Length: 92
Length: 252
Image 1 (cartoon, chains in turn brown, purple):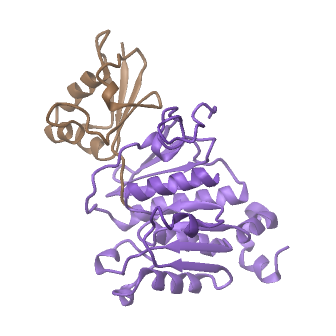
Image 2 (tube, one colour):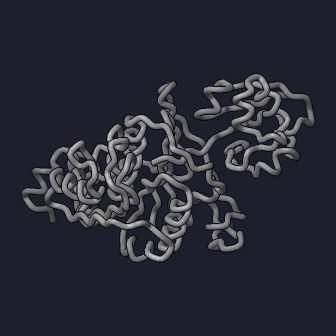
């Protein structure tokens, strides 16, 4: 199956912009993102903590719907999914 | 009815949304939370557009490090309260409107009184706790909340319409860590102008708002994108979460 992963803002600088992945059936969302993020240690550390969990402020969206980062480890990807990984910005 | 002076002053935009639209701007009261990087372009553009009453709140003093982006304030304002320079600059831009510049820290205790009977709240804050507070006040009052935030070359904006769109906490339930954020003035200009555009559109009933759409700006790539956002039924603020407003099942 094919899924599309879009990183935004600083995550994009570190990991690239628009990534097409072909995960095996049954792959969970968090594992797929970890696999992509491993190519850049700074990018990985920006998104995941030392335990490999999503940092709590990271926004994960699947097909436009935000999913709780705590659920990303049990969310199975399906063909055509579009995942957005987004760091909210705070400045004004 | 507009005066002759108003017809002349706003001639070029009356061509866009008519005298009715201009009258709606004049009769509106917009609350701007912050007179910093975002608050500067937002307040300047709303003032020159002829928004009749602008309340702008900030508790800070102008510092030299503000001047790369906070274009309400200039070198000679260093050390002055931001409300003083904001009031004087906005009056220069448009002496025909009412400007309330209030020197205080927005808090749960004073926020309702500060917002008063405003027709909309514009987010020009630099932290999420106060954004969450303003988001909830907008939900309570049923008025729009024009969100914007920036960091570096990146920015985001969305327009929250209570009962119709996701609220700020639906999309950003956890605040990113506080930091001295890097930023270049043009990013504040870009996102602040998007927010001000949304206010003008909302008041004049023009175009299609950023409702249910998160606008993202990547200045390094010069790309603007949008992410569709939907309401979270379990949202703590507008859904069925612990202190939600119970509107989470309403269709978006």
